[in-house]
Length: 332
Ligand SMILES: NC(=O)c1ccc[n+]([C@@H]2O[C@H](COP(=O)([O-])OP(=O)(O)OC[C@H]3O[C@@H](n4cnc5c(N)ncnc54)[C@H](O)[C@@H]3O)[C@@H](O)[C@H]2O)c1
Image (cartoon, rainbow, N blue to C red; front, side):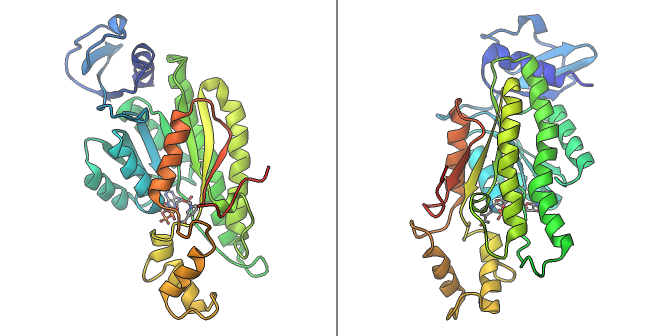
């Protein structure tokens, strides 16, 4: 097994700031025993037969700056907005998606020096394990996992196919277990050499993880289950310095899930007559916006600010942060 994770842990411990550890053929510039708070980066170190270049991203004004983050489902929708916002704050971001071409395109758009695409099926254990290996090899570890990939398979409990119910459960619920299992193990290994370094796993859940959703039980059930996993993982991983929290957004009306002109939910609801009296997509959108006390849908920036809060707040784990414009509030 590569020593990259151990090397990253030693630098985290000495510098108390994020670093990127990449394999290199360059000659070592410092000895591992010289890694101290005043070490100059970039530096090259050797350990056994391996050599690594250790560098840091520029720091901005936020604590989040310079962190190494991974966003599942980062090719589009909320995930793409989150990846963009993290890059803008000076993070290095893995964009991990089933749509490998989309992930690569998003990396080109955001800057190939500060991003890395991974093709992954988060519902497949071998694929998630390979993703964790790729992270360890590419940056020697990471600081923030955003488990965002998710799908909606709406339908009546009286009519829905079992396959659609199970697909929703696999991607929204089981996959969060797999991502936490494999990336959480990497964070725990990293912590062995950096006993004071806190890291984060954040699940992008939903307001439907806090309150039921009519004719959408497969989705709401999987998201409610996600909150149970967040609380349980938080209790267990606290000893490894990993905080586990959820962000529960309201509907992202400007994202492709709702606004795609061909298959978005607004068009679907217009065509199926779900909104009484609606004659256009705008009518359907207005109907849904009126349900939100703040009269608009959730945006990527709203979700990002919740992520910043969770990462910067060292004293928060096992929580679900609603970002719903007041549409859903915590009740216990
Ligand atoms: N859109 C909303 O209104 C809304 C509201 C609340 C919560 N959410 C949650 O936000 C998250 C993102 O939703 P979105 O609307 O941006 O979705 P989206 O459909 O726009 O994007 C989802 C991304 O996940 C990827 N993906 C799907 N299955 C995958 C798999 N098995 N492995 C890896 N990647 C996979 C897709 O390729 C896509 O790039 C989801 O967890 C969703 O439940 C969305």
